[in-house]
Amino acid sequence: MNINIHPNDDESPPAAQVGTQIHGPELEATPPVAGENHKPEMDQGPTVPLHFMSLEELKRLVQENSEEELAQRVKRFTQEQLGDCCVTDPTFVLLFCRELISTDQLEYCIRRDPLTALAYATKVMTKKQIDTCYRLRPKYAISGVLAEKLDSELLDYCIRKKPGIALRQAFFGYTNLHLTDKQFEYCFRKAPGVALLYPGIALMLGGHKMDEKLFVRCAKVEPFTALRFAAGSMSGPLLKRCALAAPCTALLHAAKRLTPLLLSQCALAAPTIALRYAAGTMHAALFKQCAQAKPWTALRYASAHMSDAEILQYSAGRSSRIRRLLIIQPRHPLARRLILLHNHLDPVTNAAVARSIALAI
Image (tube, rainbow, N blue to C red; front, side):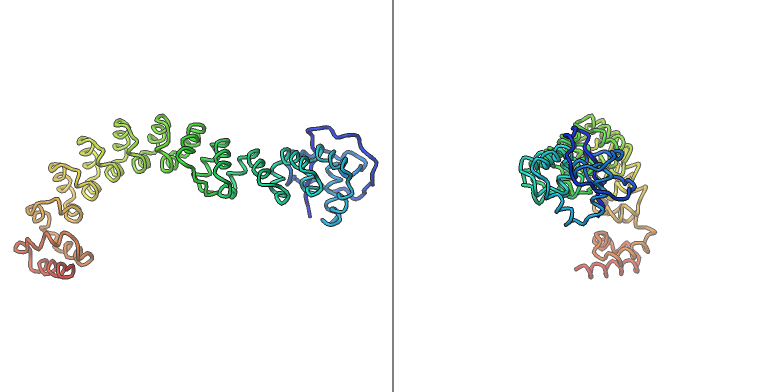
């Protein structure tokens, strides 16, 4: 058992009382692992009663005695000594005397050192006292696995106390912390810098709850993500900026919001994507331009928008491609278009179309 305990600097301890002296070899100091209001100090010299011991003497006592022996020692504390120890060393009390103190003394100690209380004394604490610890250390509550165990009111309190940490936890899912729209809105307002550090994730999870200024800043950095997850929240000028920066994404996720001019700019910049995902939004002249640029893509993904003459025009010289397509996808809509044009097809392609229709029935 190796627990490091540090004397409390916040209040001066009462005068030392006579007690049993404990001797032993000096031990090298190790970094503290429990207690947040302790600071290492030099050995203060001669040993003194248990609750007034120096850091080195307390460590020696803990290291040289079993838990049972240590428990017997602290049980010999008087109520006055326990009270003094609560003031001078609440961490020690929470670690070794938590079952010997009164409710008021426990309340005092957990307010002085809530993290040690949560780590070692929850068995003697009420739910209200445990909640008090979380309220005193909201970062601890939302940055560990405890987040999903807190009731909604307490969790909301902790999130609003530490909005930046809450955003980081929500962004990266370390604790399965899921923020509501109102919590996202609050956290973005109070900790916009975190959103700007991770604009893509911020837009994906809560772009619709950002204020306009923050949303614009994030969207300019991450136009792809903004178009994919928050195109509906964009103003016209911002939509244009993002669409020109990411035409494929604009065609995929915001084609219906694009102006005719902007749609033309995006479609001509990415005709394959336009034919595959936005054929229904393009006017005839724009569709024809894209189909002429990518005839096979037009046949494969947009045959429903083509005339018979266009089907024949773009099918010419592509019989082998058509046959391979119909072997892989016998129910492909192109087969139904071609069966009506069988008189214009070569015998091999005609047979492939007929087989495809038969398999699809």
